[in-house]
Each structure stands twice: as C-alpha cells, then as structure tokens.
Image (cartoon, rainbow, N blue to C red; front, top):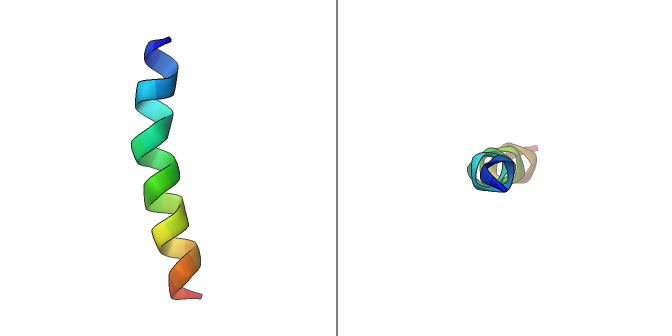
Length: 21
C-alpha cells in the first residue's frame, strides 16, 4: 500500500523526536 510508504518516514521522524526526550 502507498499508505505504508507514507507512514514509514513519518514513523522515523516520530522516533527521532522520541529519542530527543
């Protein structure tokens, strides 16, 4: 699904934000 391709970069960005905390 194209949705997965869209969510993958979003999840990586969220994970990077969580690592900052």
